[in-house]
Length: 316
Image 1 (cartoon, rainbow, N blue to C red):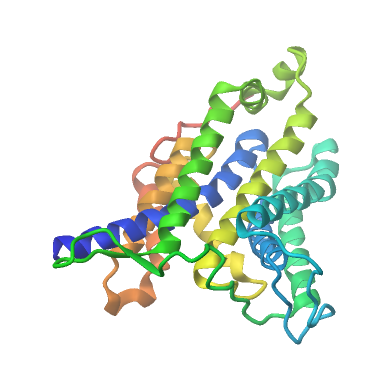
Image 2 (cartoon, rainbow, N blue to C red; image 1 turned 90 degrees about the vertical axis):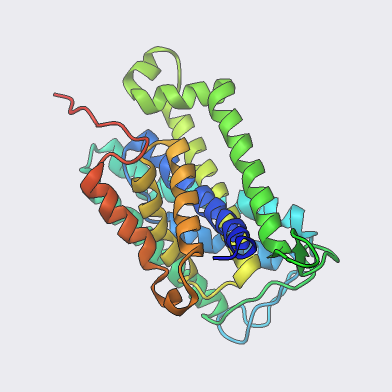
């Protein structure tokens, strides 16, 4: 393979992988606190993209209860991205209050919580379809300003053309991951989250309110999911209400590959899968989606706890 083509594919893989990492971190945060998978995360991923689409002045299609609807105001994309992600985080809190908290208070089996989160996901997806239909929504070409469509990172003789949106996605993702890493490792909130994740009873004895930090974890998870959905939607469009289902399944592969509940593992897992997909030959692009699950299968055989995961100790 020509080096310039290799570099181009590598940069594309970093862009895609960084989004996978952000999305998977939403799964990881909830799992690290409650030890369960939130299947509604994929639906919130979709919802975040829709929120931002309407906040930048987008209009709905001809189907659904809100056909041809449009907000009377609009925001620049950067502000809309933050506001839409916050709204996605608030929806995640509602999901936690309705689908998780009642079962947690009753000490229900974790399987019932999984079913409850799956029901929340189905409800959100169908609500989106009811309100705005199932057609594809495309972000305007100028949401990132008057930047060129692609940037040459090589030379005139040997160009390495990378889409500008992919560079922006990578930079936003890297900044988000850096802020999250600082929050978890270097702030009182992060230390409290780590304490709750380790043992809620001990955290309570230390004066930490686990419920407050569980709510914050779901908000942060939804915020990251909504941001990831928007970044993907701005690159390839919002492909209907079920837009987040594929990413939801792929996100599961990412966190298992990196190690359940391990934040650095989620980042590494996302980058690995993104890079692996980018190097799939064009003739076999239809099998690209199988990459994450093939890697997942191999990891389960070789190292079930994931790359950076640790074996879970059974408490008796």
